[in-house]
Length: 293
Image 1 (spheres, rainbow, N blue to C red):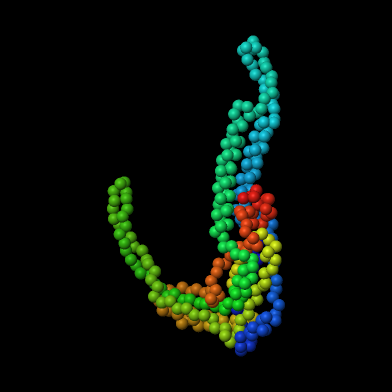
Image 2: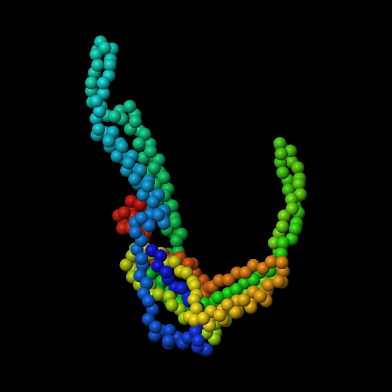
C-alpha cells in the first residue's frame, strides 16, 4: 500500500498577508485510506514471488517423490536362470535410484528457501517502522512545517591535468602519461522563493484506518502548485532573476532546484505497524504469509 501522504503545497494567492491559521483549520481536509494492493501487484513489486516460486518448486519435488512411491509400472525382464523365459512384475518407476533426483532438488531448494526467509526477516528489521499512534502526530508536524522552495547555482570550469599511469604488457611494466579534465567549482549561490506576500496552505490529506491493516507502507512526497497566475509569475520572476545574476561567472553553471520542509528531517518511507509483527507477507494473511516467507 502506498497512499500519498503529506504533500506540502506552496501556493500564492491574491491577498497581501499570509493565510491565517484559523482559515486553514476551517477547511475540511480530504481523507486518505490505505489502498490494498492485489496479490499479483504485491508479488511483482515485492520479493514475495521468489518465495512463492521456491514453494511451488518444492511442492513439485514432493509431488514427484509421492508419485514414485505410489505409482507402479509393469516391467518385463529376461533371465538366463529361467532358460530364456521372460518374467513380468510390478515395480516403482523410480526403483533404479531416480527418486534421489527430486530429493536432491528438494534439499537444495529448501536451503535457498531458508536463505530467502532470513533475507526477508533482515529486510523487515531494517525498515523504518513506527507505531500507528505516532504516525498521526508526525504527519501533523509535517503539515505544520514551513515549506522552502530553493534554488542553487554552481559555477565551475574544467582544468586539464596529467598523471602518470603504470600499465603492464606481457609481464613488463611501463609508465604512460594520461591526460584528463577535472571539474573545479568556483562559486556557489543559494536562494529561496519569497512567498511572504502570497501565503501558503497545506492541502495534504488526513490518513485514516491505518490500524485496520497489519502493515502499511507510507511514501511521502513533497510538491507545490500555484493558486493563480500572479503567484506563478512571481515564482518565475524570482527564479529567473536568481539564475541570471549567477550566469556568466564562469565557463559553466549547474542549476539545481527543489523543495524541503524546514525544521523537519525524516525518511520518505515509513512502515506503520499496529503491533509487533514477524516476517510475513505484507499484503497477505498470516497463514499465506508464512508460506511466502
